[in-house]
Image (cartoon, rainbow, N blue to C red; front, side, top):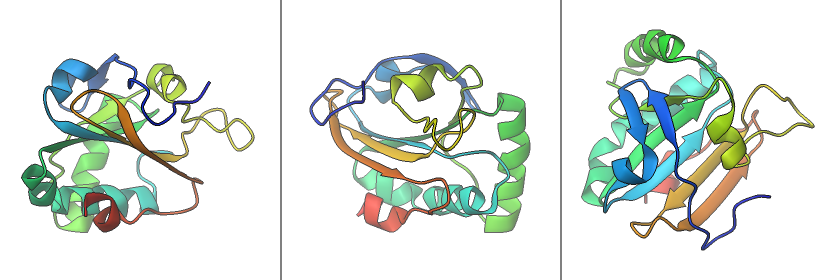
Length: 152
């Protein structure tokens, strides 16, 4: 069953590029943007994560914590972050969740089995300080997102 607006965002514990997080605890009293991407090292995902890193000060002004997710490993994320930083002329400044067992992807209904059972689609969840889902956006894997619009 998919999440609906107003639902409590599922809590989870996950390994990230910045260590282990308990999602609701990590969010604290902040707003949150949880977004998925199909795979590390893909061109569109690389530009998206670079764009999000460049928007950090705008998210901070709005008391928003950002976290990305893919089904790749933490080791892959660490290698990819170097690539993002170099090619996008930025520093990735938010955690990337490793979800190789699809635990979080399935909690948030990010897998599109008619396309792939191994990669997430491009989902965005905006979560309020009350831990309720305030916005959901889902794009096919082949479509990039405009994070200026999401941040604005």
